[in-house]
Image (cartoon, rainbow, N blue to C red; front, top):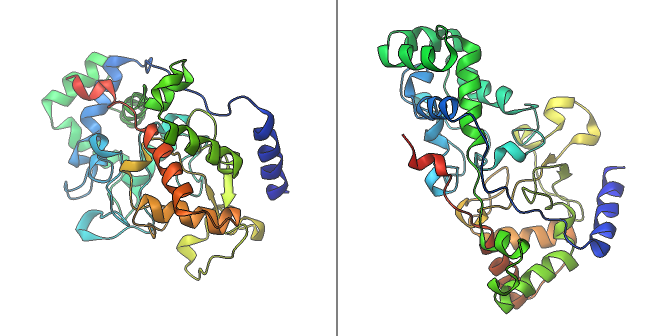
Length: 308
């Protein structure tokens, strides 16, 4: 059934004018909450030993991830999977590779309590923040109340909602500037559509809106239960190796690629997708053109990063 749905998407893509939507230019968030959330995002007190912050794994100025195969948490512990970008994460239909968080609020809580990541708990974080007069004042100003767990998560979520990267070269193209793309970039987009990449990478986030199996046409050798994807949540055998399709926005900046970080370069990632997902033996020239298109998806730095 899941493969059938993807086939329908592919057929639809052949007739639809555009399946990719430009990002909104303004985040439309509560700025006071978002700026408080920004402070918390960079706050190492969220971790058990005050050594790790959200920003430790999500470098907002350089792709929104950490460019590592797997992230490092407290006490030097290595995580199980490659950290996805936090940029434009508000557009994902679920969070994490396996979709275990239904929204950004659940996602924000996850790392705080994960023993491999921050190894803390939200009540402990509250007590630490209450010892900081600056935070007490900020929370009182924004929420008119004392520091509470729900306010911490709410502020972080509001900040993450502000992490959009509008006005990529391709967004400008979608908004009417048809001459902004080079012939190579346009050819790459045509190939992206004709080969069926757009069947999974579509919508405003060019991904992030469905689960898909890794290894549709060629089975992936995988014996590690960390890489079983959606199955680890549902325990349904049919969900093995299904992962949330990642966003392609700012993809040039987020190497290494895939849930396991196995592809070190964008070229490797494109070749892997062609082989395992599409069964295509693309030429070097075709891959060059697709990469040229993918590079047009780099957007602006979120405006909130310039604010204090």
